[in-house]
Length: 323
Ligand SMILES: [Zn+2]
Image (cartoon, rainbow, N blue to C red; front, side, top):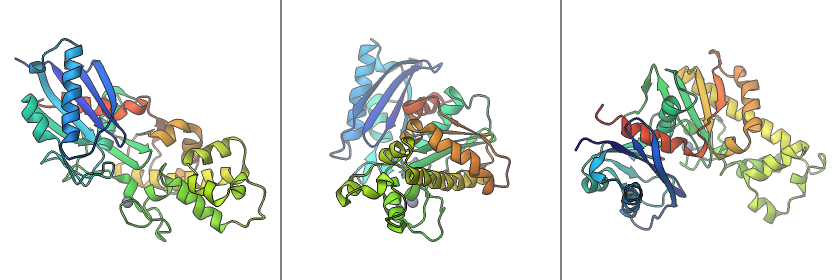
């Protein structure tokens, strides 16, 4: 039978999202479950369960499946179809294309989640009609995907446009999750903003103003979340606003490097930190980016595909199989 349906899978740190689409890109059904990662093959087994479930609910046969696109954070080996020491998942190797391809008898294509989101923007989002666009996520980590002259960049292992690991601080005061000093993600990602705040507070004189940040006990500082910083800034706390502004300057350096690297006409931005604080994240970037790039400044906009941008990209990748 000719394949008439496509599956897209988004493997996140917490959630596994699976969508069933027809070959015109209309999404018929989707499902989100908490990911299980106790052993290597559990991820692909869970994906199989959800695919069977989606096809069952739709009263369709998996025989009519054309292909599967799987998006995940890297690192990955797209040729082997597996994740290799993924940053998001506590497993060494996560085989995907092999077991899924065997079970359903179709081609399975793995794609970096940032690349996937860029593809989603071009096919379903704000990037429709653009040949040069970049997607940047500011979430637990920072990542991206780039389409240049209409071509999605993959790289030798599928890890092109890992922009979160651009070096933005040559002094390297903070260390990235990858172990290297000075990377963008070490300062501005959701999981690292609290470390950035603690570093800044160490440099501040205690009698400098009356910010609520200076009243935090050591225990409260340990529990401090990036959301707390943005909430304080929203409530008018002067020091919190200064730190948000400084994060904006660092983001502007990152966006400038992205602009120099890919010369995009449009940068769309997603990820929880940006989606929850669109103004406080984007305004300082727009104001300061020209200090760091000599290139024409791209449009910078929040994605309208929100939390599902990577899933949409995985479906777009599945749609591109065999064509
Ligand atoms: Zn890094």
